[in-house]
Amino acid sequence: MSHNPIRPWRSIERRKSRQIMVGNVPVGGDAPISVQTMTNTVTTDVAGTIAQVQAAAEAGADIVRVSVPDEASSKALKEIVAESPVPIVADIHFHYKRGIEAAEAGAACLRINPGNIGSQDRVREVIAAARDHGCSMRIGVNAGSLEKHLLEKYGEPCPEAMVESGLEHIRILEDNDFFNFKISVKASDVFLSAAAYHALADATDAPLHLGITEAGGLTSGTIKSSIGLGNLLWAGIGDTIRVSLSADPVEEVKVGYEILKSLGLRHRGVNIISCPSCARQGFDVIKTVEVLEERLAHIHTPMSLSIIGCVVNGPGEALMTDVGFTGGGAGHGMVYMAGKQDHRIGNEGMIDHIVELVEKRAAEIEAEAEAAEEAAE
View 1 (tube, rainbow, N blue to C red):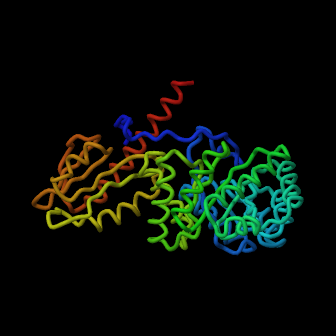
View 2: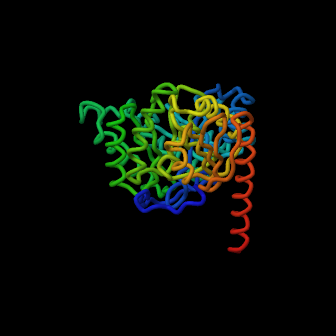
């Protein structure tokens, strides 16, 4: 909402973490919370993987992770990195040599799972490769693959075991004078994940990568991730997020941004505020919103649009948005600009008109931002 001030009761005080770099993307400190996803193509399908990376980047992904399960994938990674518009994280499991190869191939970050990467000596070799090639690292603790000694100690995956695993591997990295890392403690259980992250946030100043792993399909996974990540982000915890869905990676990016937007932590594109519709609606709200979401997807400028079916809440919601439309009677509705009544239009042709207004306002916001930057210089 570009024309409204930030209200103190909406602010979130973020946990203070040190900042690292994942390629050219800062993570931690006062950097914006970055949004990640992961490709689900076969990595050796270079063209298909690059296309998926580019689609994710267009949707707003700041960082994309690619699995590197074998030597052929390591070779493919070099081509993928060269064509990627965003930093690439190499996902490493089981074989430490894949981590070394990925660093040599130009990965911006190496994600290792402490429970299955091997001995401390092998982890040290991966650390050396990361340092030599300017990679950051992510310690990726997962409740489903904790080390055997921790499962024997605690009897089952629990927050204490996950945090202990993470801290053990932090010590290995720091003992080798490597501090360019972030860490995650993921589980598919929302309560387990949240408890582990809260404890970890108190135990280290490393940037935290948030996620509810294996969250499920598009609907169920979105809900589970929103609850889990929302809980943590509201508490000020989290420096980068990945929503794990059994769906197109682009959907993960969209959901990630919607979670951040709902908490006022980051804004990208048009935030559409719309009613669920009822018998009072003066036009087909559901269909209108569906079409507008598709037609406004190309706009990256943060701004807000209210689409409300009747005058019960329409004028009030329009006060809070850059552009608004409230349904009225006799096939007409009211257009609001910056919270004020501007003009009436008929329902026919309404969508084209709203798209035009939003595009125009987005261009104005961009111009205003550029002018402000020039003035500051």
